[in-house]
Image (cartoon, rainbow, N blue to C red; front, side, top):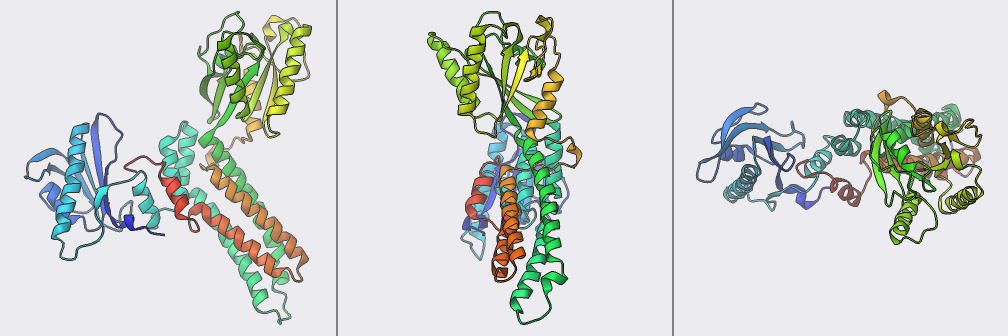
Length: 469
């Protein structure tokens, strides 16, 4: 799986762009003792922070700071790693990075056994990629590094930390081991067909397969929770003008984000805000009121509203209780409802919400949630409904972060195990098909941790990391 570029020594600024108190230049490669000597003018003891000058080619100090040398394999990447912690000015860090590359190239020329590999600036995610290739972390843990950095909520950060520590990988490895044990039983039956002993029956292969499917279902549910924590859900507020869509956005967000007036058509384009409900990011989008209009600007806003609706995970269809009996209002609501049914896939939930409960004497409806965006009454019920539709279960302490590719892989495992169960029930003449389905299920599991994957997938994953990580 290793590519030629992985033989190069790499360096990068590992801290965020801009000015700061401290900035870090990170280096990973082979035999970096000489580089540490060239940069610091002294030998560095492994895994000890040393205050020292960082030297240019003439031996003059570029800056002073802490240097830490990690000798392979006791480092993040599994290679020699050198970290230079300097003052966080962009010019200083660029000078240090340029000097590292220059010094590395100079030392390479002096090497009595020259290598084809060179010295260069690291690609995005290349340090984490090397940690994966050198078996310091698996692929799920590598992805958790990026997810921890990108976490938008406390719950997401804690769940990413659990994945980074190996909680998700441990679940996948346990599934793989149980699947491998079942594969061995099937292979034994295939290899010794003349034996009278029924390996599968005596070992309760059917029971093992059923237990495997039950464990898989639990892991898949936890992975789904992890995807929600990482990505959240996209919720679009839709309805006729003046139904209170902007007021509802403000009520959910707890802030005056959208302009609210009695004038119909105030909202001309999308207004988006991400809120948290029990740690789950909910991306709420307020849209222009849906109606026929001759105003060109408003027509563009309405088109944008329908674009947002068609990509939503859930749609809040807002109705106005104060106009519920007006014939023209009911007719327009019916037109919008028909369009929603036509444009949305069955998986997209449409929640009917009756707003302005504070403005009517008897706000009774049996076809949706009743609330008041103005007073906040009923907002908590809406929040609970959104979590219910998203499939969230309130057990964040045991949740690990996950991605859609993990969920998709687990679905493929479930499909293969279902096929395997059918072949096992048929038994006679179907054991080779059973063995193949179990093999495919194991391969799908191994894609999650990277034990069975392609370089194309690795490139797609690590290219989304930040440089220096």
